[in-house]
Image: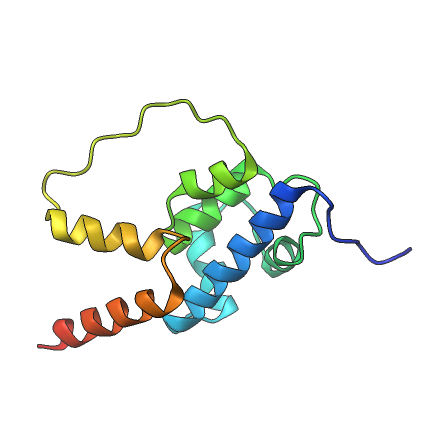
Length: 137
């Protein structure tokens, strides 16, 4: 049996880039692959997202990632599910929920930056370091 080949689907290739970026971000936060697995399992124990699935996603060796698994991955790592859905071309026409009014707008802005795939990793690293410093006081 030949080894799996990376998909030619541009959406799957973009999704693989997204997975690599989010795994790197998780590593920057001190998470191992085991920690990522545990976070996903905590978010949805029945989604069945293991290391092999994550590695196949990272290498674009899937035809179409399963929605429930992708949602569990995103929830486990605190990533907006809509980001992955947009990459994969899922039509989630639901209206976005209103932001939680009890969360400070500055905190919401920081959370958006930390989860935005277009924000450079360096900027996210600086934000996280600043937050860690402030949390220690």
